[in-house]
Amino acid sequence: MNKKKMFKISITVIILIVLFYVLFNNYYLITGKIEYVYKKYFQINIKQNLNNNEYSKQENYSYLKINKDTTIKNKEEAKNAIYTFLDAGWDTYTVVCDPDYLTCVNDMKQMVENNTYLTDLSNFVHPFNTFENVNTTFTSTGKITLKRTNRYTKEQIDLINKKVDEIYDNNYDKNKSVKENIKIFHDYIINNTKYDVENTSGVSNLNSSTAYGTLIDGIGICSGYTDAMALFLEKMGVKNYRISSSTHVWNLVFIDNTWYHLDLTWDDPITSDGSNALSEKYFLITTNELKSLNDNEHNFDNNIYIEAK
Image 1: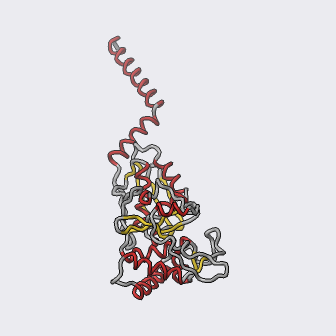
Image 2 (image 1 turned 45 degrees about the vertical axis):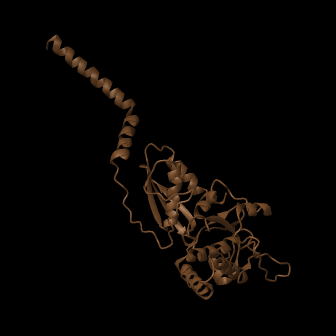
Image 3 (image 1 turned 135 degrees about the vertical axis):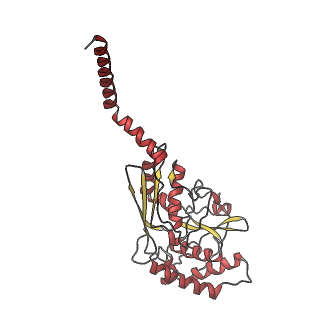
């Protein structure tokens, strides 16, 4: 073998050794790049059967928007994905993290594990699409699947709907204004509901925290009053959502191009002798009027409930 051929072989061996060394020491970097390219350009779109239920509102607000894409590119889209999932009434929903959104999984985990945060998002959806709990599963490829247990059972929804239809048919007056009809249902709920004074933590043997307790059992706390009123607002076609502080929840209503606060709980005061009382102090009042009452129970987050500013 001549020297020239030996030299070529030596160079080839050296090159192979160098390549092996580079590949060995950069295995995870190289494979990570391959995985990135696959996720970014070749990953097949998620296939899932998604049919919104009849209670999906499909509303966009200043704080929340309906997501049109299942690929999540930033924290805003992650938040909107959860809202879209809740609003649509889906049992499960799968999204995938864009490879450039490095904190996607961690952000989604933090959102879903924060019950207060989830409740704020849920306040914008129809009462029947609210949740009892939300769970998530994550895959190494960045797929995130949301699963939920509904707050209202199908049996409860059927009974509530029958009751709402009955009350609506017997009380709605087509000759009256929207405000006047809202007042009719405001008064009906208050006159037929007792505040559950025993429920101080949101946990009760009764259904007072839901519209079922308010409309079927005649007993409620703020969330029950609010859900019940929201059902009549929805039936009337009035844009609304629930608004809350750290300790209380009430309705926000859009009529005559203005957002108004409507709080049935505080318009149904607890009396010392247990007698019924009906107020309209919190009936369709502006935010300035609400703040002037200075009751320390209606301190909502302006960054979330932007329409109420």
